[in-house]
Image 1: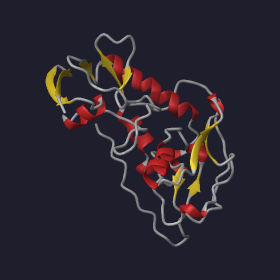
Image 2: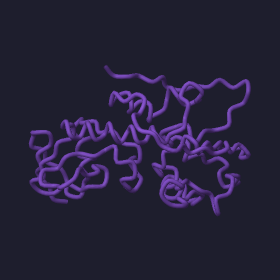
Image 3: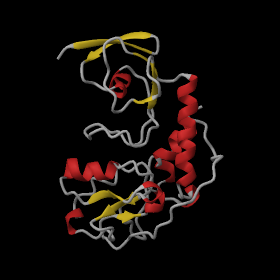
Length: 225
């Protein structure tokens, strides 16, 4: 595979043809926040928090699904990029109904961690909220779609890694949600001994059932100064 030379934050970088901007940035120790991207899963560009500035492009581009090209000039942390990521985060938080101080995943929530890194607190915008009943009928997975940010990682992990095709995206616009079959409650025997979707969820939308006497463990949230 041939190599390509690009300019990344003012430095000349060589990388293999076909790699995405996000992959090249990570290889060079540059942290670009992302919710929907994870190694081993196909890129979708669903969350848009990974946008970067490419010289000559009319708009910011999603780094997780944009391949590098010869001579590309990229800025991953310009003022425009940081401001845009902050607005995107505010929009995610505006429709996110999770109450952090009551959430079992609060100390390990990627949404909260990236919001802190971007110095985003309470969003300025007003929007309708999505409220769903918690689905705890399954002995294997608890779903709280109120906390879902539609990153679709659970869909891809279930389809591409586990090969079980339990989840899909249903409806359109504001009514979009992750559905099971014809928007039914999750209660699948195929989920037994799997749980591949749970660690891929960046919020508390998916979790394993916890017994009353079982200790809850999570890596504490560390906010970088």
